[in-house]
Image (spheres, rainbow, N blue to C red):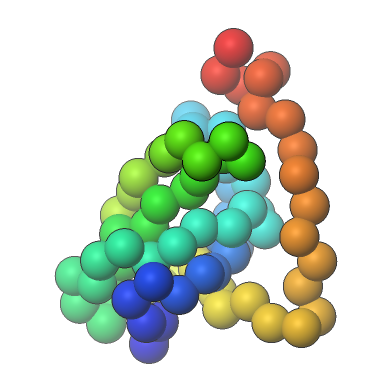
Length: 77
């Protein structure tokens, strides 16, 4: 089970939002052990997306993960 405020990574692309597997988000609410509300934030601090996702769509991050930055300009101009 993921914890409130835990930083996690997306495990699949969500094309309609422009989000890709590996994008980071924070758990902002736990609806039940299998359903989480997560917030994706742009580098500027603006909320990019607030989604309810299943645990299968998320994974904990760790020392093996590298943080990167990519542009969403082509997705949401």
